[in-house]
Length: 267
Length: 238
Image (cartoon, rainbow over all chains, first blue to last red; front, side, top):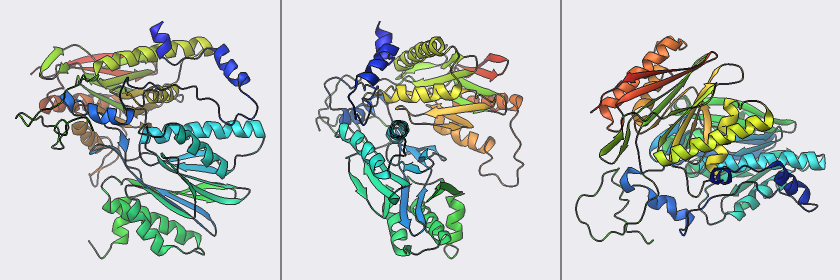
């Protein structure tokens, strides 16, 4: 029946066939999800063309500043919390960090739905890896899984800029993954439309031998100044610290209070 | 691109009334049917309210087309946007709820429905459902929960949210009255059910004054542990 087909339901025997039927060493489950595509049109241009005709305006949540950097005592991750849909602020307290497991974090920038969906799928794959291999997945492997998911849909208009942060056997790890399937390992990244402003701040204040408090302050400042100048970033700063025994959430502070603290001379 | 750039000019949402040259028209699978939805979560209740006007362009198709749909005894969903997609989406959600009930021998919780809706919406990432959804209900601990979505499935839990055509007018008012934003020296009193219902009525009356697509009547669904109560209040019909 038509509704049954379109609802995405998979019967138990079909699911079993998928799990047992797949070959040994299959790194990622064939996605159970099938995506509907508009007939005869290029998907990435389709949405743009539908907007504005007869009052239709499909605006998707996006826009951000996120940053992460490694230093002597681990990795600092700082994100803003604004989700905009066109020029409307859809949410002031969006959660842009996904806690994959106690040793892995993923940040989200770009399209909110794309980031939420694919990073939740990544969390599922990381959990399956742990169950199958009896050890936690490395940061390198996790970021590669996400990168390959993006490669499968390259050119279809996905928008995701993410940083995978973790601590594994090789020490602290920081990878940048985006919707073009770019995957880079590094010591400092910032993504989103406010990233240029954040880079300016953290580049000038960064030292490898910072104390933990100095590092927290640098992360906070980076996001605060970016939200001050970028229209599509704002809300609160969510700050995480990835340490050897897992991540901790350091603070959640409103940027309007922070900017007053930092720019005492200006106002 | 193969579309003339006049079709989506950047001057807000105003339509071009003068002849500016040949423009290619193509079939649009979407249409905008208006309507506003609102949900508020309290300590032990949740309210989902919507207007009942169904419009298209300059016409009103119906004055009695509410946009709240009851999903389970503890969850109500409000859908606004393109009515065709709203109907199909609610049918699909109902079917999935039944399947879950038969496979797992229990009803889906509000949080689970929200997570499932996110994947249903994302399954149409490349040809979205033009629907703005807000789910209101009680979580497993009996506290009120509101989940708001964008058309492709990005979602989060809120205390209050307005969606649909008058959302940009209502959300700042709710920020002020429920979130106590931009007010100084005010006691942050928690919202009780009577005050919340009155606030929802007042807020929709304001929306009907200034938004052409909102009006006719207001349908309020109040979700408590004793079940779902419905109330209908008249609004401006002009």
